[in-house]
Image (cartoon, rainbow, N blue to C red; front, side, top):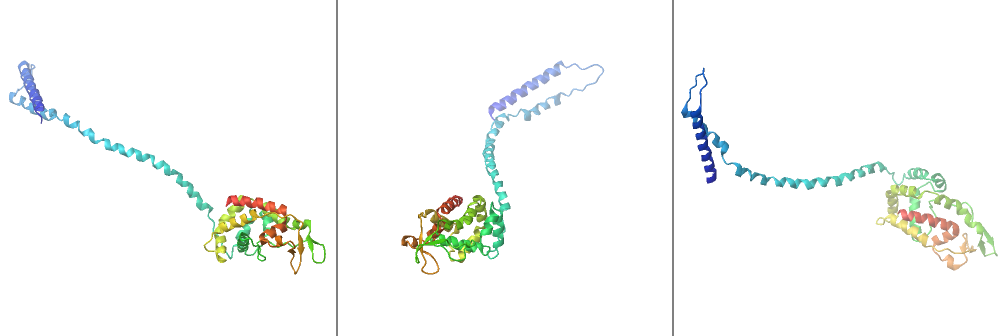
Length: 290
């Protein structure tokens, strides 16, 4: 205890003692009562105030200095609201679909196609056996500039190409020869692009499995599909009329510059410039979705 504190306690004790002496000197006992005054005990209460008057105030001034660390907890509250956006991902499992095996995929694919805008008409012109495998082979050939002669994903055109004889060995393709492809091109173009891409994305693992079967295990089928679309978009138009020769069963282009083109480009000539432009416009939409 500091000296100032001791002096304060001593001063209070002295004033208390003098006050008690004053009370004893001026005290008048009430009449009719008997009161015993014990002077010796009157001094003892002086010792009782001592704990109350002990100079503890200087110590209490130091205690508030320990409180400031509690403020550090407030910045943590701001981090929690950032994570509230996460529940959006909970809706994704509702989109999950149990895919069929590749061998049993035809029914699933055809049902999905029928649900598309103009899907029923599309199914009517498509092959109904091993459709995914046929599409994969078809796309792979187109990406390399080729055109498959078998296992096409669509039904073959029943009409023969109309030609006109120039002489015994030379023919010319009739102007209406392109019209036999109108139905299949118009049906394909009428399909909703966004819906078709959603179905494709759903079936993409099955397409990838079919692509792996033909030896392309380390190539993403999406990349090959883009290459096939770009090959068609880059193709140039060739003006007719188209002269033909028929050395055997099939007609060939009499113009060597046309006959030496890639098979995919020659097929675009067969479907005609109008159908080719419709096809390219639709493929651009698909390319944007990929």
